[in-house]
Image (cartoon, rainbow, N blue to C red; front, side, top):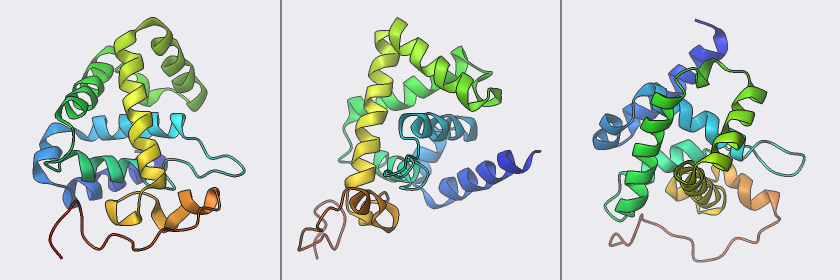
Length: 164
């Protein structure tokens, strides 16, 4: 196993371990790797913005998709879309970065379903980048810092309306 794949595998394993067991059953390790790669294509590192990996978009998605308040239609689209993508493009994880990017752009031009799936991942990626770190994304406030955002107060203390 190559070093890069090993690091991704151990990261995904840690996510599975710490995430809700229901969602762990929904996503295979390869599905999580695919989501991680796709999110990093949608949100690459630039001179001013962090990558999806840096603001922990996958962690945010896995943590939040298992919550009862997560929109069920979105959950179905993300889970089924990932499974469909994996079965349609089993070679995806073995492609190089540029080939992955070309594949993503080509399928969203050809398929409304793929476009909806990528759009939904983009939506939750933006949420991950700019939500309070309490929710599992925006690691070390990287999203906020990248746009010089002044943090609003009071910040949440508990998740999703839990009683304090």
